[in-house]
Length: 146
Image (tube, rainbow, N blue to C red):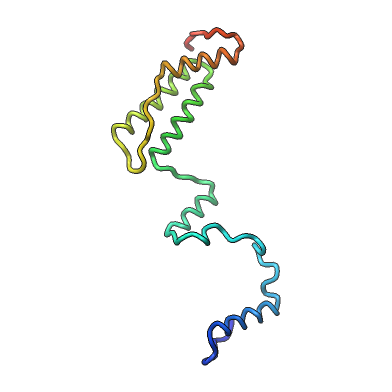
């Protein structure tokens, strides 16, 4: 513990003396993070939820507003439908995400607008058939529903 600042000594010069004395004793040697850049939040304005954001980053968690989460889910569903092993499964994936999209279209949540409309199931299935045919190398799209 450092001693109290003597009366009549300017605060700046007293602090500088304390720092010089600590450096002379080697108290600043081998500190963790020495030479590393300061964290990005040091340069930003104060955020009341800084600890929540840091905890979420440390835990690998993320939160998106409902509309953005559904946009991501819709894009993932489209990719999953194109990669589906059967037309029936591709159709089911798109129909399920369309229900969620329509629900959000008619009951908008707080936050940014969704900016998505339901997918055309027949168009997605047609694209699924073309991709499947290209991947199989047959050139002819089968219409078997599994």
